[in-house]
Length: 406
Image 1 (cartoon, rainbow, N blue to C red):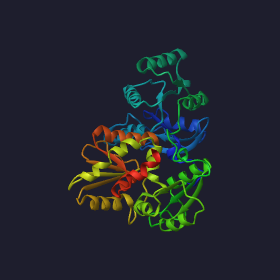
Image 2 (image 1 turned 30 degrees about the vertical axis):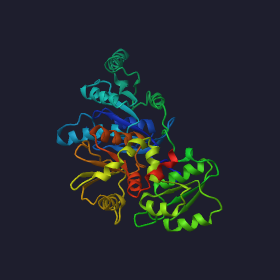
Image 3 (image 1 turned 180 degrees about the horizontal axis):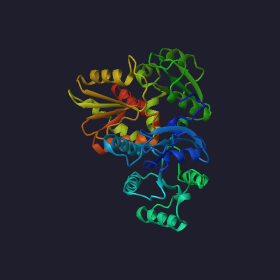
Image 4 (image 1 turned 30 degrees about the horizontal axis):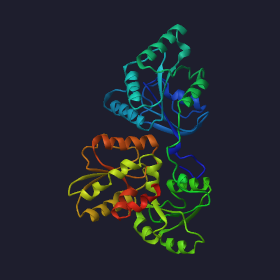
């Protein structure tokens, strides 16, 4: 995730490429991008794990292309690979199902299309190797049969080998995007041009050397884009900085782990919130995360708590997810719950065994995946919240941290 100039993966349109083994998924990706980004082989099952590639795909712009294992894979390992392919749907903004045109669609293809429809994901069916079909009539019949079975109209015949139809395919994929912008920006709709915003960023052992983490970068950029003024300080410099500023800031945004100190040092007439809370709103899911917050007050010995992070950063001494939050919960509840930790793409399918789910701000997840995770918790009847809200609640400052959104 480079610096300020690269589009973060969470802000890219996620295009999932699905299909049976040897349908030509990797060849289609290479043909669309004009690059050899995906491994192509005559051997079935070359792609054994979902592979994500960040790229520019005109006319769409920045996208994340996800090449998936074949949905007809067999055996014990094959079953796991198929499961991984289906899991990719949870973060897919546009699904592309590649079908080997000479062979035609199969039960595996229709099963995937049914799941895509259930999740309401825009979909394009690609009949690959159409140049070797015996007749145009046979191809037309295949298209009509798929339309009859699924009601889909976005079906196109192409040839990855000859590049036939590839330009039209990219145009059709682009047409599936109705609104790729999140419902809410990070903070720019909450401030006016020339407003002063102070960001509080701890520099500890967990901070990456020589740079800021992604949500901090994105927040700075969002403020600058709307004409705001940004001041960045460490938590022990906040009090003196606020006293020395020539004007009162509109807002203070803090890293969640220093919420308590920052709240004490920020005057009551200055709005205060956290990066984590802003990103929960940015993903469009503030309300359900807020509704689950009181659960922490009722946790008892042995209650199962799942703590999830969207990225796979290296765990260090004093890590907020695996060390600080469990310690704060134990102190808050005077109980000994059982904690389970997941990161990156790991996310349990069944959440019913947990009494509480606590998620990070989700800056590395796209909106669709974050909403899927929240919906999974709601379906299981398991309360869910996020780091920022939990920490604010346990410090008695949740109401203050939410005043910005009233």
